[in-house]
Image 1 (cartoon, rainbow, N blue to C red):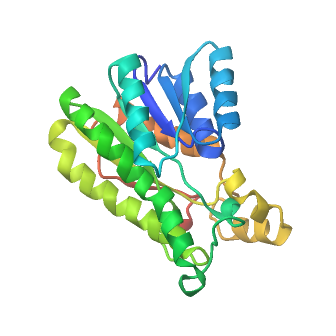
Image 2 (spheres, rainbow, N blue to C red):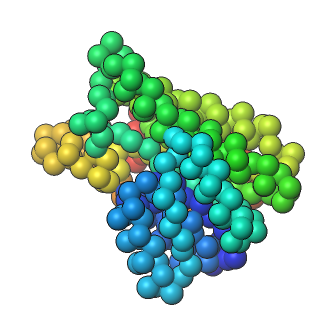
Length: 256
């Protein structure tokens, strides 16, 4: 029960790493607020958590829309009176290629560039902006940002995504410095290739799956639960002296 009685907002909790984190956080005692734009996915994970005897609340949220974020935070405070943990997990990647072009810099239309940064970077900014004053009054809280290996290494093929995730890494550091005096910890996870819907299409091609495995010291792609467990550690009091950490969870790829 490492998150007993804590109120935790998880964005993008309807699938992948966010979904895994929602279930693990709930099992560890948190009231899990599922901030998810896909209503079907959000209600499904809410039902699963409630059916398991834990606490959850789905709130439909577009993290790139400030009005949505304000409404989310107000509803959480009205219901629970506090916010202890935020996992800024929501993001779009290769699975959104049919809607936003994941490509090199010169091949990326500006509208797609703006949309990708609007979700992947502005979403972190907006929720943090409206939660931090609450955590400051509480004199404590933990914010965990989900970036990517792309944010700390030169991974090609999705430059807007890479720029956004690099921004999340830099934002994590300055937030940790700015708000440490309020006992607010801000840390960042940088996942490598994780078996989620975001890269399912890529992993379905055998040669690409083999290439991922060969380029990883642990010789496999990661599981969503492995990212969720890292987020749990950073969200919990077990990491009470950890802030400003940029944590690769990538099977050792960043060490190469």
